[in-house]
Amino acid sequence: MKILVCLKQTPDTEATIKITPGGKGIEEQNVKWVMSPYDEYAVEEAIRIKEKKGGETVVVSMGPDRALEAMRTALAMGMDRAVHCWDPAFAGADALGTAKVLAAAIKKENPDLILCGRQAIDLDQAQVPAYLAEILGLPQVYAASKLEVQDGKASVTRRIEGGEEIVETSLPAVVTCDKGLNEPRYASLPGIMKAKKKEVKKFALGDSGLGASDVGEGGAKSKVVQFLPLPDRPPGKVFKGEETADMVKKVVKLLREEAKVI
Amino acid sequence: MASGVLIIAEQRDGKFRKVVYELLNIGKQIADKIGGPLSAVVVGKGVGEIAKTLGKFGASKVFVVDSDALNLYNTEGYAAAVAAAVKAADPAVVLAGTTAMGKDLVPRVAAKLGVGMSSDTTKIEVEGGKLLVTRPVYSGKCLARVELTGTPQIVAVRPNTYPAAAESSATAQIAAVSADLAAKAKVTQVNKTGEGKIELTEAERIVSGGRGIKDKANFKILEDLAAVIHAAVGASRAAVDSGYATLDMQVGQTGKVVNPTLYMAFGISGAIQHLAGMRTSKIIVAVNKDSEAPIFQKADYGIVDDLFKVVPVLTEELKKLLAE
Image 1 (tube, rainbow over the protein chains, first blue to last red):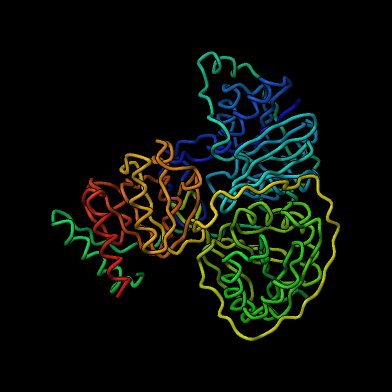
Image 2: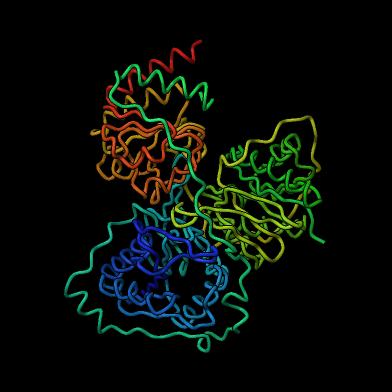
């Protein structure tokens, strides 16, 4: 079985995000870049399926040179090889443009299962997997908390409001991975050493068969025109060092009279 | 020429999600500004009757895709049905809710139509007849203003962002739409574990516990408080990872994004990953023993004290107040 994982390199969860002057982007210097946390569930799941059923695992990512580090992490965890999609023409791509590039790379691989994270924790859009599935003509399941794969089909559990639903799908399919699916392993030292020698294939515009206007900023149908800081919250009223009952009464009064929420 | 607004009216078991009524409200405001009708699409099995009720909340026309094949949700069939309704309605704007179904369905609809979309949106403005939308990015650490080119402009809206549409005696015209509903992935089973509980993502009020709650059994005091003010009960990742609460209760980056009027955090320090899930709450109350806890910087009201002393008193005070 051939399992393909799409991943994205994002700023670390704890990173401070600073907007560039003019608001067109975020400061990329001094940011710790990592594999988006949901993608770790996808990588872990791919490796576990291979460990059980055999086959091959391939990681694909679109992003500038630094994205290679996130792919090396996936290789160090145990993925077999990588495809690094980058070309200056890809810069500024929206979800649709990104999906076009990934789809072109994935068509050459012909996997049985495509796993992605539920969403990348930068723009938090959760769009690329659906565009990808539509372009490839495949079924999709968003946010798997459990995945069972067997003979050309899969059973996927996903959380919904007030419970969960079980989705039966034929393979190949695009499945996105949620917290609870597994506990991602850490890369071991031998894993890190081996990862350095694993194959990373480059995939550029010429390999994709796409035109420059299909992808990148020119082809984007959804554009961030400006990043904005959060509106300031006025400083709160915090009570301390008084009798519990007195402090509670003050807060209850404020909730009713000032905030008018009770 | 595309005009007006189409709402994707999500239903399960013949009931609309709360966000549908919020979309009808903001949808009407947008339609009035850009011109054209407010319509809705309802997808499912045996949904003809509930579809009619949307007229009372402002939809002038409701497109219905009704089929046995749509009894339970499936991405491909539902996306094909919505796309067919979009073709029939020819709207300038499509609105949907950021729900478990919406997160799966709406990008697929956008993909089918070959257009872009804005996910989990918290503000919609109209400028020069076009939408300019704002949404939290980088786990809510900043905001992005997004421009959508192409028609229709598809926007998924975070629940609880807008008030619900008022009810009137108006009626809607009903139009049946058909589509090729073939699907390779289908929901075969729905397990309801939260029956009777208020859904966190739709809750007006939330009472949440963190590491400070110390034990699973201690959530009982938060449940008692929640019962008094009709709140849902949430938890931080620390509480979930320590086994005090279940994963479906987790509020934060790797859990649910909530948007209530009142969010009360007990024994929650306020890590970035928690703030990502609740920082758009209108009023935040924090109770923590540690006066240095970062949650106090985000709170409108705070009490530095032991939550086990505060919660019972707070429950009693609120009970008295609400009984008045």
